[in-house]
Image (tube, rainbow, N blue to C red):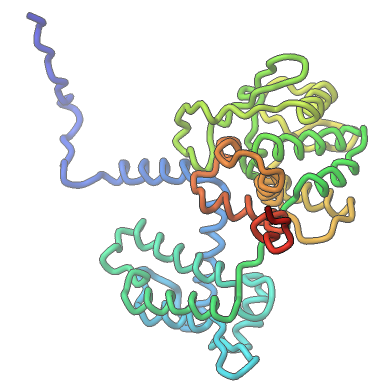
Length: 365
């Protein structure tokens, strides 16, 4: 019989904890863990939304915003920012023009007029999250039936008007090749070529994933291929080891990576770095810089349309659909969990090649 283990005993010098409540130290530690587990993009997005709530509330009510927020305030926020067709061909909101101008002048809004529906819904969601984190779940105004019904009908009103979220253009193969042609043999050109091909060829990596790519997760298989282990992503935030997280980097993408690493001398840490004066390889790129590189290279190439870092991800899946490649294999590489979301890109530009659409012109038996 194995000897029974003795339970740990509490040191006499330390007071016993109350099992029904957290200490202030434990609450602070839990809050720090929650914050550390959030992505930088999420923190920035939440912070921006709450700063807007603070500014709008101060302008509208002449007070400092506090939680919980009353239900009428959230309804007022919605009607202030949701455009409605009160007259044929004319959309209005309830936000006073002078407050609208002040919010723009103070940097809380980019331009006059109502925000996109996505922005409005996001700001409501952020306020709801703020109430949850504050422990105000029972008094969360965003869960109120009237607010939920108003927001739902607002979405339908936008849909009936044909207002759809504006999407960035997908960077499919042909425009991507034009963009790659702008990358010369300079150190910056080698970096940008490697970055673009890495992001596109490994399944359309998000800008945060590109900025967070490290040498420790890159393994050279042979002279013409690498394997990159995506240890953390939007769909794997816990960093669980999964076979599908090994992304192949082959062909021209592997060649571009080899050229960049040889030229930069990077052997550890972040793969993609800033380049300072005198071709000095400096600190890691941030997600915003990755976005700027994509936009700047697209502008240099003269490709038409609005592009962002997400254009690489959308372009990869769209091109796979255009070439009738396997959807499961495409999703395994891109990391999409939802078939519906992936199909939204997969079918985006392949409809014109549909044989079903051409049945009337097809030769019969």
